[in-house]
Length: 192
Image 1 (cartoon, rainbow, N blue to C red):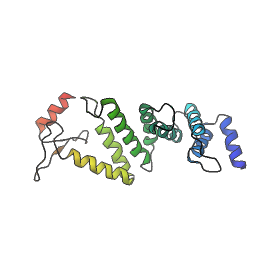
Image 2: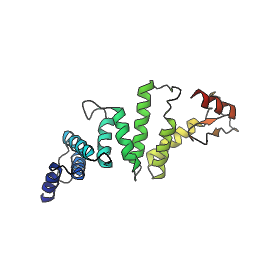
Image 3: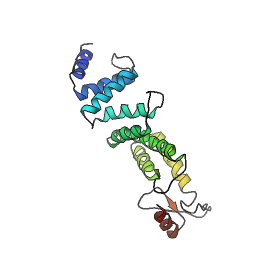
Image 4: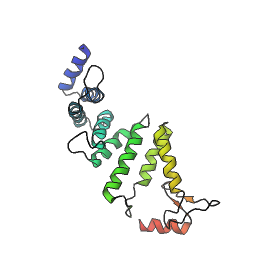
């Protein structure tokens, strides 16, 4: 109890780390603190305002904005912003996976599920899924395999289906698109 009192006192004195830690305690309902979404959001917001590089606060804020039912005005833009900060220092694969899902949801929201020239989030999505896979995240690994398998099944430009004995060429720059020929890759690149 004394430790919790000191944590609360430090947070109220404006220490970013204390607010971040307190936000996590309220978010998860641990260490003698009841789960309280309002208090968790408030503490994480204060921590992030005091230290704009606080990954723990960014993660909490990202999750709140990602989960449309947690706060009155969730924003996929803010979810992506905060989860990107958390994912940049990810050591478990969780934040990278969640950031990739937030990117996918934002892309679908912006384009009604269609891909618009010059705004394809697939390269970033696969980048963060590969990071989550490399960190041992099982869901990230499964989703990455599924998306790569889908991408390898038809040309990203002309949509030509791959025959059993064929293999598409992966773009060496973005590593997120596969093409049946160099011409298709150049055409897709010019289209944006």
